[in-house]
Length: 436
Image (cartoon, rainbow, N blue to C red; front, side, top):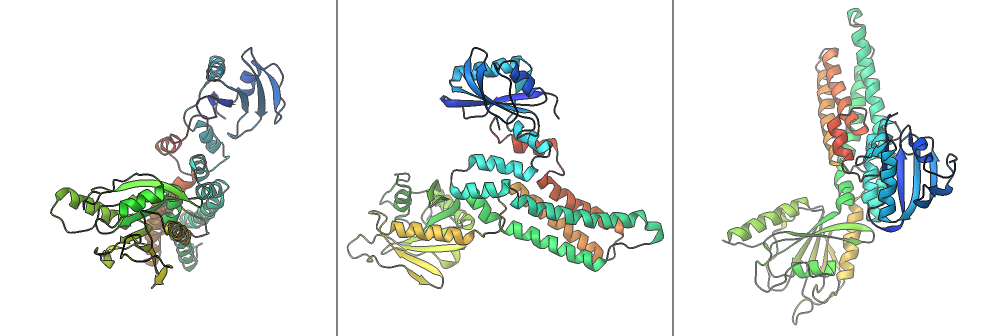
């Protein structure tokens, strides 16, 4: 248990109906009680007075969110009251909490593993139902349970090899090499499955990337503006108006999308436009969904350019005389073609439905990986497992094989928190707001 007691306002900054101040640490109850007009009963809300400052509701927890004695005091939401209460408590022995320090203490006291602690920040940041579901799933342990099982299996594997080292003089073999290879392959498969889910998990967390591509003047910027319901991009009849990618987010059916309007694809000698086209090609490579926009009398994009998990072709400008007439969507070879008018909005609702359906096809129902740090650690773990398998196949001495297994265990431990460093913890918890 930490010797010092920390304090912070746990509600958002600013004026509101109420504000909650949180204390945590060995002296939390003692410090709070000196300023409250009534004794606190554990886990019961008590209406009382905080000095002469305000009437409050206070609750104490012998082992709260942090795993330490915790007191939460709810005041009226005046900025003056918040500042005075916090100043009073810090003058009486508490100190101001650092960003994320309450959650960091929960981790250090064993209430959460590191992956769950990171999910707390994602839960706070969630703005869509999909982000909320992903963060809650990770916080409640579905993802952490998978990691714990992998960690336990690696520990068993390490223990068997370490036991052989203890009896190396007797030339005793405790671990069946075939079973070890099977276990390594199973762990490798689990790690690869998590890595494969990263794109879907990261898309939920940051928004599904959608690239709007096509030749100049087919209505890409108009389509972006219509989907957003805002004049975000400049619309002009002059080809090459869009020189850079324009990125905005919006929500369909609780799923966040990142729309990327791109420069028109064509041959050009303009150096700036060439750079815009290069950025368009990069956006296509990173997109989960590509909207290929065409219009009458315009060139189509080369098929080999549109390498994305989902391609939706859009025939635009159906409002023009002599243009294509609106009709039901067509599906040929798995590619959907829609006919619409970005200018007047005809067919836009159907496009939104197709985008939402495509995003859900990309997201499996299994445990999802959404953290870049975790993905990189699993990639390093797989490399260590591959080295272990190679050593076992080649008859490498047990002590050298054990080194590779310990490396795999180390990389997995950086995700769960079995292995930590001050740099890792500082980087993770600095993302949190003060008071959480």
